[in-house]
Amino acid sequence: MASVTLPALRPAADGRPKPLAEAARTVRVKRGAQPTHSPLTPFEQFAWRTFRDRVTAKPQDPTLEDNLVKAHMRIRADEYMAKVYATTLIAAAALAVVGGIVALLAATGGSLLVGAVLGVVIPVGGSLGAFMVLRGLPGSKASSRGKNIDRRISASMSFVSAMASADVNIDQIFKELSKQKIYGDVAEEAAWITRDTELLGVDILTAIKNGAARTPSKRFQDFLQGVVTTATSGGQLKPYFLVKAEQYERENKLESLQRVETMGLLAETFVTVVVAFPLFLVIIIAIFAIIGGSGAFMIEILYAIVGLMIPMSQVGFIFFMYSLAQEI
Image 1 (cartoon, rainbow, N blue to C red):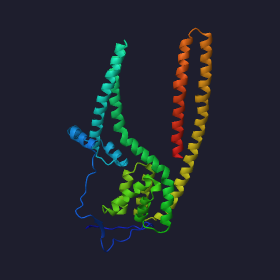
Image 2 (spheres, rainbow, N blue to C red):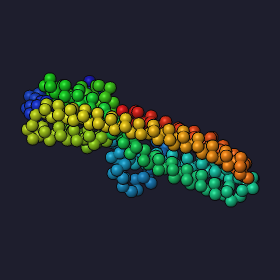
Image 3 (cartoon, rainbow, N blue to C red):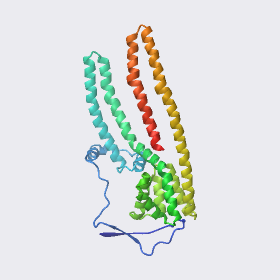
Image 4 (cartoon, helix red, strand yellow):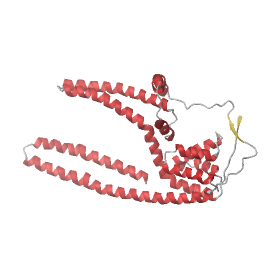
């Protein structure tokens, strides 16, 4: 085992930093261990070799880099863009084959113009869609992590305030919080702060400031910035933790109440739009089919309503209600 000597700075939970330790803190790692880059998959290595010159020819988008960090996707922005280009190229090739087959079938059936349009629209539209989805995936994951943090921040702040009430040091608070996997992404954010202090030798206030800069949750960012401001201004952290725990608990109750009211409104809308409206529409169209002269056309409309409109609207409402229920 090899030893790495790191400085130690341990502010107490009341916000008053303690003096530096007489002996430097030592972190033990395996002998010969060196910092390594996160390993790439074989496909990512192929994409990097193929598109490296293209992605490095221009500066990377800082927003993409920021979203990759917030999403905890351990890949550089240029490597990710190379992966996006490679995936889009493969998708374009597959969709070109599909478009060619569809165009051939349409041309064989006598619809030459429709076949030509589909033969172009399927590969081009599908490739653009795949590129846009992959390009926005880091931002989507970061946003999802931010929502998960906001859902669990109330319970995690109760844990933090309980430990602060016992006069536990702030770095130890984040270390213990990182071990509580029940808090999900909040524990993961705390684990990154603990990594900065224990492995990289960063003092706790700088680590918290860095954590505030990379978290995708605005509420957790405000909390961490408040910790730094309170500690550096000479305030006490224990009352701050207690106040924030009460604030987040109150806000969580209000948000839960709003979601329940929204679900109630959606339930009423479901009865009106998905149950009553299609029923009246089917009855009216059936009457028109009986008394009118275009019965076959009306029957086709009925098939479309019963086979497409009603199932799709029900699936859409179920998915939306399930998403709201997961946030409560």
